[in-house]
Image (cartoon, rainbow, N blue to C red; front, top):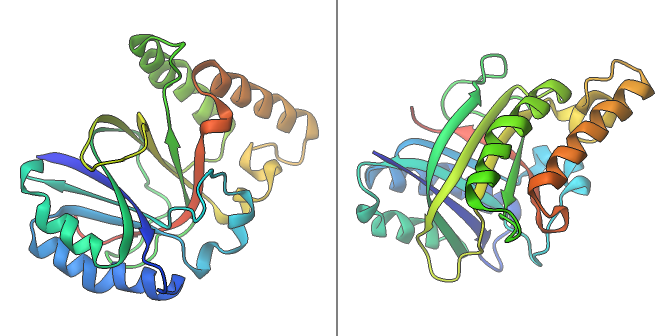
Length: 233
């Protein structure tokens, strides 16, 4: 069993809500029929409109969805890519290794319904200045501790990219799925667990920024607020 992640840009002429609805319904059914297990759809919809002001992206237009699922063998992916391509103008697919430092046990919903909160999807590159082993060690060691200690995250899923599966895929080396209470996405006081203290907010923010700068080029980080819909177990 292998995990695949597809970053998707919506087809031109298709409205945002129509794109989100089609992904969650017709496309999800097609993916399941083609063998997708543990299917999750992260998508920009009206529920995250207010949070889009904190989106970080270098793409115009930006990606609008991140679809993840497990497949018995990634060799069998062509029918799934075909299903995604019916609503997407562009796909960037990756084979990944998943780890879950923080399991979502508090913000849950029945299958097919929206997970309460907002998923922040980070698409990250490894700077050439950092050897791969050192990059992984910082991300999975020091940075994990800092992130969990300074932020109000309720879910944290790391996906280390093994290889790209589609032509022209951006050189992302990691894809992160982090769940936050929706009000925190636009309120640093909540995001950094400061409990009304400007000093604590600044301390936690500084720790987080320093850790990020130690293994990433911040100006090349993609960060996208999305709604999460877990479709199948």
